[in-house]
Image 1 (cartoon, rainbow, N blue to C red):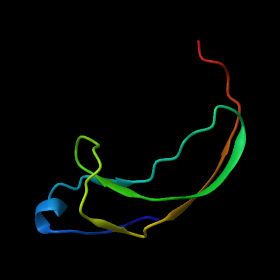
Image 2: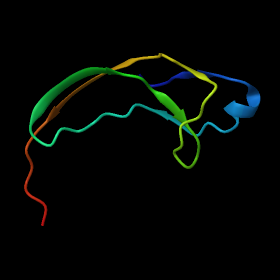
Image 3: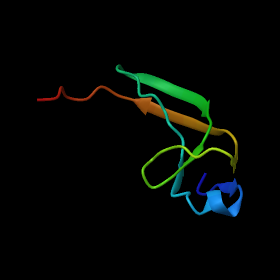
Image 4: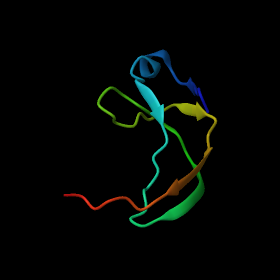
Length: 71
């Protein structure tokens, strides 16, 4: 989604820098279709506790293709 709603005490909300969903990238070509829980993080990227994020799950669909080897 383009946006998320974060609910928490003001003291915690003041620390929210971003909301993201982590997806493990496979090491070979693969179709990925999974539900992932978004997390709110602070400016250093650390997950914040004591809050709720809506939607609580997001669907991730992607196709991982083979690329050229790293040099």
